[in-house]
Image (cartoon, rainbow over all chains, first blue to last red; front, side, top):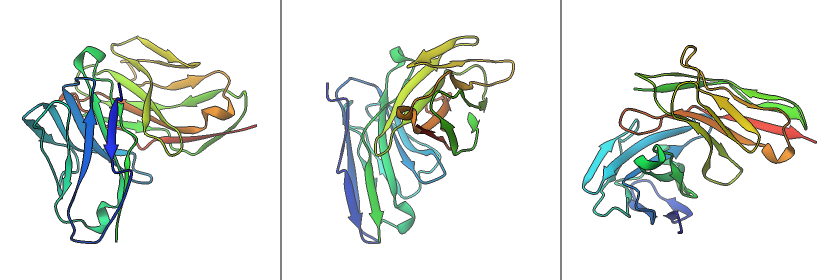
Length: 113
Length: 111
């Protein structure tokens, strides 16, 4: 299994541009989530999904959209990038049979100028 | 929703010293509790977990006991190594099966 994969690893955007961060998992996990990590603030939950076709907002959803058309994929869309969205983004997946222990991807480092 | 308070870092220890990183949580009910570790430039990895009160999670010499009376899940290791230098995160599982992480505690172990 590849586990949780994220692309790209690094990205630089200009203010106002849009882009999609990709996340995929091959473990048949029903639960997937997106976090952002900023210095001194730990990880904050952006959006999560409990299964295909179902998504919900986390702590900091503004400026981000998600969709879950398949079990495997959970892309995160930045609609109009802002410098405040400069961060490291982590995708994670989990399964109830594992007590929802989260498996994390390697992260995407995004800089918005 | 659930929340967590972690001991502020950074923590600097000498090799073979005893480690404690405090973690207390607020939650409805008795959620599963987790410790994650993040090595430089990497994502988070599960270190240990406990799914019910009085459970002890352990891995790689680290231990934490789920204490419902004090709503705590403190991380301990008897003898740290340089390779344990990392950031450690405590997290309770939320009612929607989401995780709310603390700010993390940076540990540096010097030879």
